[in-house]
Structure formats: C-alpha cells, structure tokens
Amino acid sequence: MRLTVIGSTALDSIETPFGKKEDILGGSATYASLSASFFVPVNIISVVGTDFPKKYIRMFKKRDINTSGLEVKERRTFRWKAKYNYDLSYAETLGTELNVFEGFRPVIPPKVSPKDNLLLANIDPHLQSFIFHQIKPAGLVACDTMNLWIEHSKKELLKLLKKVDLFLLNDAEARQLSGENNLFEAARYIADKGTKMIVIKKGEHGALFFSKGLGFIVPAYLLETINDPTGAGDTFAGGMLGYLSSRRKITDRVLRKALVYGSIMASFAVERFSADGLLKTKSKDIKNRYEHFEKLTRF
Amino acid sequence: MRLTVIGSTALDSIETPFGKKEDILGGSATYASLSASFFVPVNIISVVGTDFPKKYIRMFKKRDINTSGLEVKERRTFRWKAKYNYDLSYAETLGTELNVFEGFRPVIPPKVSPKDNLLLANIDPHLQSFIFHQIKPAGLVACDTMNLWIEHSKKELLKLLKKVDLFLLNDAEARQLSGENNLFEAARYIADKGTKMIVIKKGEHGALFFSKGLGFIVPAYLLETINDPTGAGDTFAGGMLGYLSSRRKITDRVLRKALVYGSIMASFAVERFSADGLLKTKSKDIKNRYEHFEKLTRF
Image (cartoon, rainbow over all chains, first blue to last red; front, side):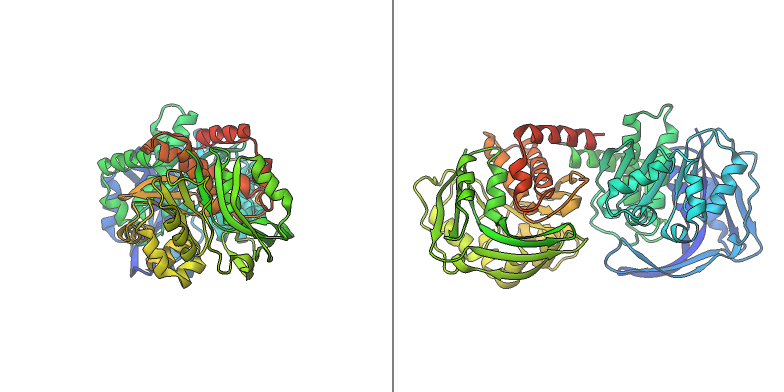
C-alpha cells in the first residue's frame, strides 16, 4: 500500500555541539518520506520555494517518492533555525520563517488515493486538518505534532485527534498537552480525546506504545555517534508508517515490529546532519541493525 | 549459592513531591539484601547504632538474611537526608551523618564463606576494599558506587575496579568517573580499568550491560506510581546478584534475565517510601511482573 505524507519541507540552519550547518535539507515531510520510502512508495504533499535546490526534488523522485503534490511557489522555502546543547533532547528554536507555508492550501494530486495510508507529519494542525478533509482518507491515519502547535493550536489539534487512528508525540509534548506528569495519565488523556493508538517517543530512551493501556516498550538503539537529532521523531513516524503500509494486515506483532523499525530508522537519521544519515543508509543496513537490535534486547 | 552483601544500613529522612518521611529504614545494604533475599539466602555485613529499631533486625532474620555480620554499636545509626524534585532521577543530599560508620572495620563472621558471591553495595570504597581483602572472595564479585565516592575516593575506587567482576553505576556516575559524555566511551574507560562486566543504570529509562562492548539493553518497567526513588539502584543490584546467585552457571541468557530481575525488583522498591515496596512484594508478584515485562517488550 502507498503512504501519503504531508508536512514541511525546509531549509534548516542547525547548530549542535558537533557542528554548524546552514540551509540544509530538512522538514517533517522530508524526513518522514525518506524514512518511509525504504518500505513503500510514498506521495509527498508539501510546498517549497523557487530557491529549493532541484537536486533534492530529483533525489525524492529517485527514491520512489511521488512529488506531484510537492508544490513549487514563487517565494522562499520554509526555514527553521535551531540550536542544541549537549542535552540533545531539546532544540532551542532561534528563528522560523513560514514563507511559502503562509496560507498554503494544497490541491491534492490525482496520484493520491483516499485508500493510501496517511501520515500527517508535524505541521500546523489547521493544515493537517484541511488536507485530511480534502483527501477523505479510508486507510490508516497517523498524526504527529510539536510543542508549538500544542501551545498555539491546541483546540484544532484536539479536534483532529478524534479523527486519527494513531497519534505520535514526544514525552515532553504528551505532558504539555495533557497537563499530566505521569505518562500513563498523559496517554489516558489522549485516548479520551478519541485516538485509539498512541506512541510516546522518548528520544534516546526509546518509545512507548499505548492502545487500551500500555502495550509495548521499545528501547532506542544506542549509538556511538549522534551529530544532529533533527528529524528523529519524523523519521521514527515515517519508518513506523512505512513498515505498517508494507504489511497486508496490522496485527499486534506487526505494530511492535513497526515501532522497532521506527526506532532503527531514527538511529540512522541522527548519526549525521540533515537527512544525510538516511541518504547513506541501504536496505541491508536496516536489516543488519534490526537483527543487532533483536540480539541487544532479547532475554 | 549464598550472597554476601556489604553496604550501609541507615535511617533516612526523605522528601519527594509525594511525601516527606523521617528516620525511615534505608541504606544500600538494606535495599540490596532485601531484594536479593527473594532469590537466595543473604549475609548482610553492616553496622547500626543502638537507636536502630530491633523490629528491622527481626525482619531481616525472618527473610533469611543472616545478621551475624550486622554489628550493633553504642552510637547513632548512619543517617541520610535528601530531597527529590519532580525529576526523580537526582537526589539532593541535605545531610549525611556517618555516626557508627566512622572508622567501622568489621570482623567477618564465620557464616560468610569466601565461596559465596559478594556484592559490595554502595559505601566508601576504602571500606569495600577492606572487606574485600578480609573475605578473599572466590565467587562472583560485584561493586556499586555513587557520585560522592567518585568525587572524593576515585583512586581507591579505581584500584578496586581491577578486582571486581561486575561494576554497577548510573549514567551520570559513569560520565563523572570517565569524563566521557558518550556511554560507549564511558564503558570502555571502565573496562580499561579492569572490570569485565559493566551495568550502567539509567533510572526510569532502564539499564545497559557491557561486556566487550554493548551486550544488552533493558528498558525499565513503566510505573503508574513512583513515590520514592531511594534505593532503586541498590535494589537493582541486589535483584541482579540474587538471581545470578540462584543459578548454577552464569550464561549469557542468565545474565540477561538477571538484569531484567534487577529492573523488576527496582520497580517494586520505588512504588512506596523506604523499603515498604519490597516488604509488601510476594514471590508471585515478581513472577507476574516478569511475565508482564516479557509481554511489554517482545517483538
């Protein structure tokens, strides 16, 4: 089954203790689409400016990411500037330029079928909601978010939660959204809003899956080198949804494996700046790391 | 096989966001012995003052913890006062009274055989070292520590590390001891000092086991309620060593299961203040939680 991914495509300027890069490829749709494309063909729905390097669009196409929904507008590409200190779990936003995303209301291309699974990667919930209603999805719908939208668009986000099957967010966001410190309570709050399945991502500490209570605890793959945590959560969501879309039936076992694949894909993403970690990854690397992860966690 | 546990026996005054208790049962040897006693008979080697409630000594005896090495001296019991905020991973020490531990040099009782496994639970490395040389252990030797000793008795601790088979410490302590931020590097530093097996405990995020590189990642059992994290690490060490001592042979599989039991035992300890969580636990609870943990982590 194909996966449709909506979200941001960006040029990021990132500083971590391990380096500083300007105008590098970023955005939630970028990371999620690249991650998912290892498992299934992807449709990306997003927008870039005329300053967005053409080589990235060619790269998407080469990776079976359909770009008919990637609009190119006569303005600058969305930009995000951020800094991480040694605690790589938190990004300090230094600047956001919406640019092409201001008032962006995409036309859904014919290639996107309502039957495809849908990942509403992190972007303004108003836009997630608009696209949701344009597509009228019949497949599995997953939604990701971030602290900014919980702060400024909580109402819209909560409305959307009633309509999605799977909601992904990190531990700090789960606490922020629910007002609960305990993650069981936070998951209960979200489930009460209507989402059946919830993934709480804990960065370098793995992730928790809730569906009528806690169902699965997945640790993170421990890395020797982390250069840039940007996009880890988007990559997790893309890997998870990509794997789910590659299976005929979503069973308990398939869901568990999907979370492990999400964790594995995120581990590749953070090893290098921008999407370079994902772009260097081969299918064989994923298989090897998955098998190593099995060895590291079984008892 | 029996397990000998040396460490502190204390009266703690603890404040967490969930309550405040004074002069409650604590100490590394207390938590570790109680935890291990679910798996094997234990010898405790420690010291208390005449103000130490007799009911605790009776309780130890009832749980097959041999107290012939628990000296009672004409002074006050060791006291520790600490406070936790919502980040339960860090205890702020408000006061320490060594009392009976000043100059404590125990006589090893005949009941303690060099053949027993030995857990040098968290206490001054000079004392750990003294007892190590008194016992001349022939079994498995494990050692735990804390930030205070890394700061003030690093040289003595490093000398001891050459002689122990298994070293347990938490992530912050591993970074402090090694001067390395990355936990792989930290484990390599410790292995270079001579300890073959290393457990880096990550509190609510589980633990890592290293033996010639990373061998096992164990998540923590997620809890609905945590009241007092005091003794979690000691309980982990006691559970792990208790389980290892209950097995005839230490295989890779047994080591992995031992870490899971450590994690499970710690989960009981932190649910209540003092050792109340462990004291309320039945063998059946451990079996149930272990099975639940298997369900929560397999994929």
